Image (tube, rainbow, N blue to C red; front, side, top):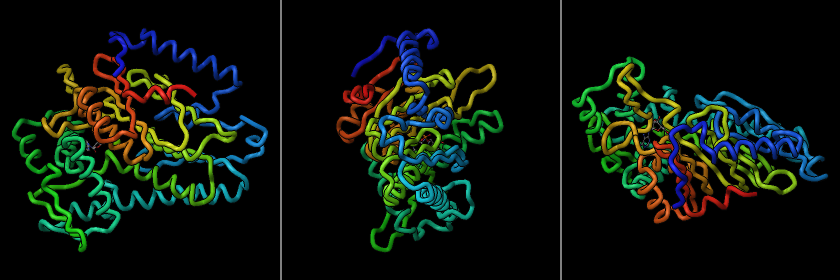
Length: 370
Ligand code: AMP
Ligand code: MG
């Protein structure tokens, strides 16, 4: 575990400044910001390009479109031959995101998840895809000691209401919501795919994994469509398909959690996924009272996590990267990196702690150079 010195003022953080200058210098040397993709809103602008590494790359066609999906901007970038075919594959990738959303969205009243959450009684039949998602989520819950938990909806809901009303929930309300949470209170009966809730009032929320899953599925559609080079980026949950045209790695910029539109660090990857979770995206703060509550809930306390301000995970699969970024946000650097080493040897993480130190997993550095 390598730890950079803590800093008080992130804007004067030498490491950060040096990295940022490097980004700009290198990019101007190459003539543009091509190939640099920022995890989050700046992604679309910076993702532009990436081609131009070789003659063959120049011959390639590019498809790129950005659409509002799952409450975020999703950009699909594809390189290959045949403009029409790229367009078809791009459309199919967006259609897959819509399909996944129609199963797992908490906000679409007609989604399978909404129907499941509105169930009457303690048991409900689920689709194969829903069962797989729940089983996979429960596995991640077990491996993360319950830090990641898709039964957090009652607490998530309580804190969402607090954000809207500006009023902090009381201890009794938190305890009551906590009673309705806990992945150990879920049962899936294999063959008939019946999900049982062992406590009344329980509900599920895939907000910490579904975006990554949608991105992974869309990337699968891209590959099945015969496109070997592309990126699917849903507001910072990114899946790289293959390499950039010309064979080089994709260059992705990790956002500085305390300075919008500023790149903290660049990572270089091929055929892998990256996801970032941060307390700066949505949080609850009462005027004058200072306590900042992240939208990522620590299942043990029922409050927003306090151990991290941002976590970036690189993994072979975007759903896993998404889920682990949330789990490590709860676990913090010490427990988080232990869990990663023990149970997820193919994943790497960069954790920004509340004192704004950067903590890297052992293998992360391999992604910080081309
Ligand atoms: P992410 O932005 O991927 O970290 O996901 C955060 C979202 O996941 C929140 O907005 C909640 O909907 C949900 N969530 C919050 N805390 C947890 C948790 N401990 N485990 C799983 N999902 C959570
Ligand atoms: Mg997540």
